[in-house]
Amino acid sequence: MPYIDVQDVPGIRALLAFRPETAEPLAALANALLHAPNSLTQGERELIAAFVSSLNGCTFCFRSHAAIAAWHLGDEAMVDAAVADPANAELSPKMRSLLALAARVQQGGRAVTEADIARARGEGASDVEIHDTVLIAAAFCMFNRYVDGLGAWTPSDPAAYRERAALTAKHGYAMSTPRT
Image 1 (tube, rainbow, N blue to C red):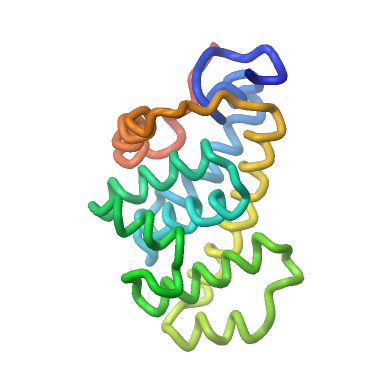
Image 2 (tube, rainbow, N blue to C red; image 1 turned 90 degrees about the vertical axis):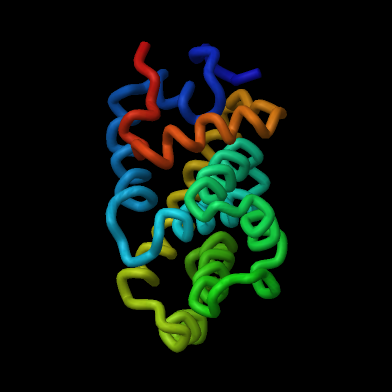
């Protein structure tokens, strides 16, 4: 049960509806990072968000972004494998290095080393891809703490996440905030 009086909708959506003045910039950030054109695919960026959310133990964000990543990538089992063990998952070397970088950011910004950046560059990541990976990881640490810190309602049925995933994958994040 949420710690504050919010709409009866799952996860971050209820929190965003509670404070529309903060919802708009947060949704715009999520849209820019995960949905807007980029050299990393939407599925790859959603995978980064799901991975960081998993590391943070944020069930709502993990399930939401894993479902969106699976919708884009067309392979739920691959997403689950990548989140569980990215070093051994069927991913490109570049994605493995970016997930390793995201894991370092999740530990703390100062956990990132020059070697982490060099590894990502060595696997073909551009500076924009490195930047966006770090920002996605940092933003999802914030989003995860927002959702869990206010006790947002987290559905237990995986089907609830799959249904919402298709809408978000197609339309982005600006439309996903309910209005009171």
